Image 1 (cartoon, rainbow, N blue to C red):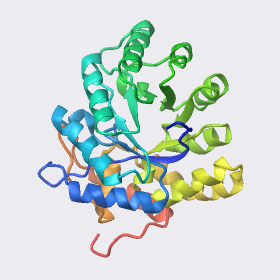
Image 2 (image 1 turned 45 degrees about the vertical axis):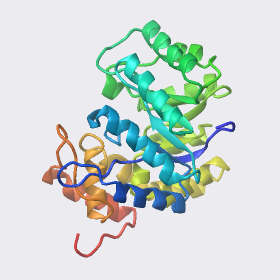
Image 3 (image 1 turned 90 degrees about the vertical axis):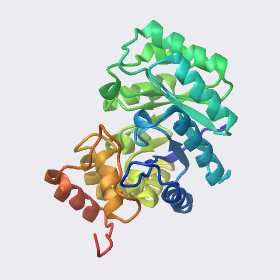
Image 4 (image 1 turned 135 degrees about the horizontal axis):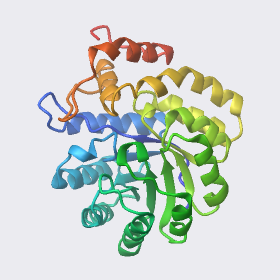
Length: 299
């Protein structure tokens, strides 16, 4: 992580069997698929990886397993954020011990800290664990918004190296690029906004869509990063319906259902999340078709 990590980083799902237990064999196959498809990095135990439903030991062991399976082929970024600072410290230290290349730290959800609380939370993590750290702002899920001023303060820490912006606000993302892009790598946290943010100077995307179309997302990012906006837009247009319809219900419900239809994983998901409602099946299938993704005949 001495140089900026750019491109398509997959926010990888945590495959589960029908009984809700982790399916590590399927997980390993997904990792190999991403490496071979040009994905720039694996983000494990993030929102899409159902981090909120993983037990503490399970969380740490999944990061360890991911690092071992990737085996240095591409960087591994471990989601290590929590709604309490002590647990975030535990996860971040564990990720460092297990060889993760960086950590992704979500703003503390549910507790609704002030900006000063957020600053002190992230500062303590940065000062306590010597591993590259990426901030993650997703106010729609956390009821907590990391302000631009606080990001600017946090950017002074040498091992805070980036931010994933999942505000869904293009202007907010562009403002981050303009004010913090010299110190932080800026990653889109919204697939639908990735192309305009990349054109505006972002470094990449931490992507849900990449679970479905890793090669296409990698190619789109690669084209945008070298200034070939036309080629990037042609790819992105085919993925646009995926960017939208993979969020018809709470992530990762639609993406895991789609991946099960593709034969990549079983349909397991953990309560309180349940499988995609039948009302949305046709819309997700239409998005797969638009992206030229063929399903197995049995699907």
